[in-house]
Amino acid sequence: MTTQFDLIVIGGGPAGSMAAFTAVQAGLSVLVLDKAQFPRVKPCAGGLTIKSLNLLPFSISEIVQSATGTLLMGYKHNHPITYSTNGFVCAFVVRETFDKFLHDKMCAAGAEFCQITSLDAIEATKDGVSIRINGGKLVSCKYVVAADGANSQCRRLLEPKMDFARGFALEGLVPYDMIDHIPQMEFDFGCVDYGYGWL
Image (cartoon, rainbow, N blue to C red; front, side, top):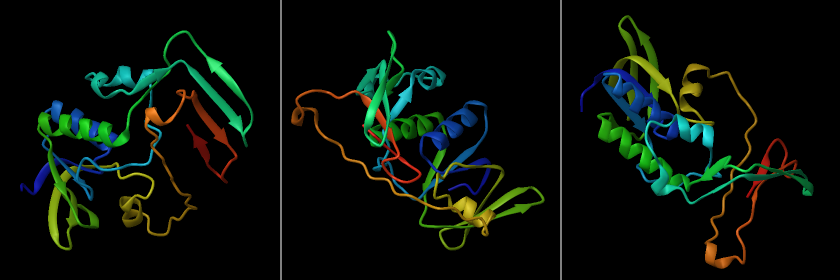
C-alpha cells in the first residue's frame, strides 16, 4: 500500500465515500480508512431526501426500496401530524446496501481503501498530516477528512477532553410479507430522552 496521499478520509460511510469519490474526480490521490469491511450493518432509517439524491453525481435507483410524499411527525405517540405533498420528499434504502453501493463507486473511481484495526494518532507535520494506524504503521497526506461519525476516534484523538452524553441506536428490519400494509414514514420525538423513534 502507498503511504503518501493528497487526502486521507477517515470513515468509509456515505460522507467519507462521497468525499473520497469527489476528491478522486478532482485528480487527488485518496486513501480511505475504516475499521469495517463493506458491506456492514449500520443502524439508520435509510431515508434520503430528494434534495440529497439530486446532489449525487450518479443514480442509486437500483437500490431504492420505496419513496414517499407523506410524513407523520408526533410527540410521545400523541396525535401525529401528517405532512403531505404531491411529489416525493424522501426515498428509502437499506444502509448496508447503500453504503456498499457508495463504497464500490468510490473504489471504482480510484480511491484506495484500507480496513484498519486501530486509529492510534493524528499529528500535524511540516508537510501535512501523519496518521498512525494498526499499532504503528504510518500513512501521511496533505489533508484529512474526519468522517468517522458520532463516536469519532478522530475527535477523541484531537480533542481528548471533549465529552458528551451518548444515547443508543436500535433498528429492526421487518420483511414486507410479514405486515398487512406498508406504513407511512413517521418520526416520534420524546419517546426516548434526547432522541427519537422512526418508522
